[in-house]
Image 1 (tube, rainbow, N blue to C red):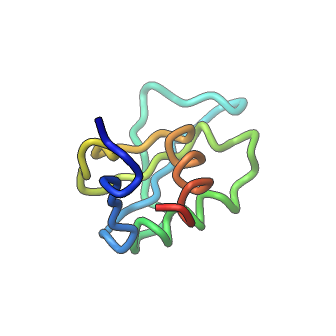
Image 2 (tube, rainbow, N blue to C red):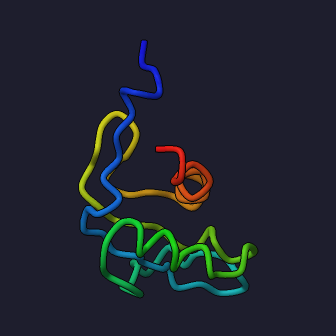
Length: 89
C-alpha cells in the first residue's frame, strides 16, 4: 500500500499538449492529434487548464510514463486531477 510519501511526479518532465481535430465538439476518428504546446509537464497542464472546460475532452498530454500514476498519454480527466493535486504532490 502506498502513502503520500511514496507519490512522486516529475512535473519538470518533457511533455507535449496535443489536440484532436473535431467537428461539432466531437473528435474526428479519421484524424490524429496535432501539437499545440511543448515544454514541461507543468507547462502543459497550465496550458490545458486555460482551455474552455467544454472542449477539454479534445486534449491530451503526451509524456514519459511515471508509474504507477502517469501513463504515456494523459486524458483530460487525468490532467484535471493532476492540476488539482499538483500543489500537494
